[in-house]
Length: 418
Ligand code: FIX
Ligand code: ZN
Image (cartoon, rainbow, N blue to C red):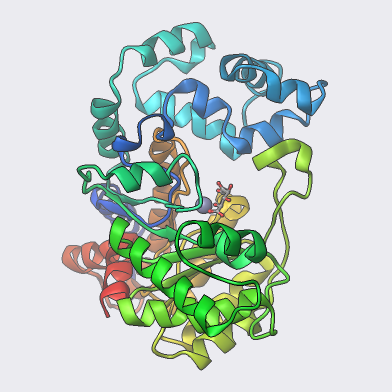
């Protein structure tokens, strides 16, 4: 093949890239799934798929019932309302609705019957252990990072008791309450044996360091993480900023762990919607640049929620090798924006990026989130390789497989190990 890249050669390349992207196992570097040892905390099945907060938000565009009344209903009754509003009364074309259908379809179910009771009885026949393997296999996901919060009263006792780990579920230490609600958290830390005061004395900071060290070891965390509001600034003298500088970053350096920043979430814009009521805003990425520049020995894993921030984030990654860009997060995880972000990232930062994470809260969502993402990744990559082939540089099968493995978790693994 040469500069004259024929339509037939292009079609072959497209098929090759699609096959490789589908066959390459992904490491899902941020989810809200749990090791099966956490029992009911690991959500799965049709009702959990339907009451996903993305669908709750969409259903209230149509539902005419007070929020408090909805929240008092059982999960099944909530799922019934959502199914009726989003799938029966209107065509389910939003990305989150389509995702439910992709998932059911891949599981071998006939969605065209529009029969919720029969879907429920199909799911009732599964045991979680077997179902986990089925979903991971269909999604071609080799491992998932959890979101593990010592501040979660349901989760904490399971870690404290201890359990045999399932190696497909990797731990990440979530620290939002530490950075965002300090006075309350200081009090909790003190009651757990980590004496802290509101003033952030040296003694408090060393207690926070001890707390982070104990939990990092207990859960074998592979990174620390926080989601921050659009107003986040650094350094700004706030408690959050001081805790990052004096406790979190030194801790990450000591343990050789990245700090993941998810920037741009405005919590509880509509509190009546509970978890579905979070919004977003544009972040100040100068704060991120100051972190990367000021702490070159620290590693930052970063995703941003606002479409308007995406180019700045890519440019920051060009400046700072201690910054690893990942995922199309939440409101950006819709095909139109994923396509744009994927193209922009490949064009600005090449292959040293993790193109996607699922953020799955329900196990079965891995199936659709990865299938939809893979379709777009394959399409965008095909365009890039076609451009190369037009110059006479035709990528080999091995080179394509190497690149795809990097984009689906290989680059992340190297970044964490570096
Ligand atoms: O902060 C996060 O990890 C977010 O992903 C969640 O808060 C959010 O609710 C979510 O599920 C987005 O996909
Ligand atoms: Zn998340």
